[in-house]
Length: 317
Image 1 (cartoon, rainbow, N blue to C red):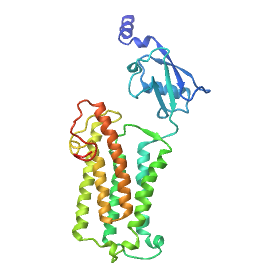
Image 2: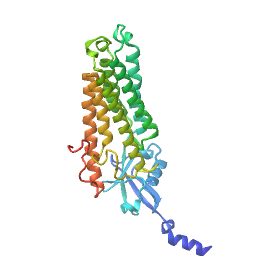
Image 3: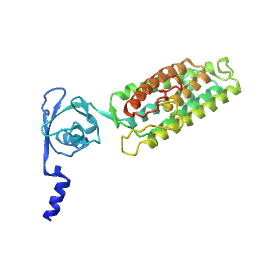
Image 4: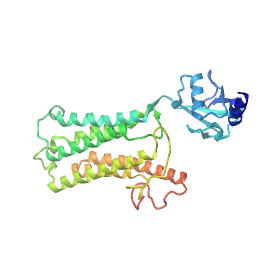
């Protein structure tokens, strides 16, 4: 038995001792900080966060940001990966109340799913008159609803998030973008009596309507397929990042944003609504900024990242 124990200790020397780490709050001294944590030398960042949570239950792991020498400690890594030793001090920052990204996405997309039927089916109560929807309005309603229902399904069954949470109060800012711009503002102007059947504002060539539907369907399917590619790059429960290849990705870093922009371009062309064009500009600009950030991140992380790829628009930017 003694020989077996010696072998175990040789293979796992960290079992011989724990080390003490000082946790120092970035906001200065408090009743809880500085805090001294006893933890195995081969512990992970996750275990350290759990140890802090055990001492201060208010700060659950998703609420913590730990850093040493201004380098943020990443979950899943060992403390020794950062050369953390006995007596070292680690900086602690409270990120505030958190909410899961999945929940935020569900809330964001549920707004338009609720708002558009209200404006479409309760038109006499909202606009104060009875009228018949035009073919353009009906097609617009169904493609917009299809888009947001698809997004909810992807959120539930497709997306794997690199970060599990975001600050709770961000949900209000993020939801405003969808609930107000692509929800209330878009629905009010698209489904109004000025676009009703027989009105000049609703007249569209038959070929144009079905061309819009065709391009919309292609863009939606393409967007979905790029999300599947991204999902398959990350094993469940991990934050692994790899270089994406395949449909769309051989030209740009974020084809999912490109196809999403095409979806809203089609809605804008079909409806000729200023509200739709506004959402296209606001949403497209935001996605382009995200694409640039992700593109730079890919190029920084992967030395063999394809140099001919653009961020979001093929051959342009």
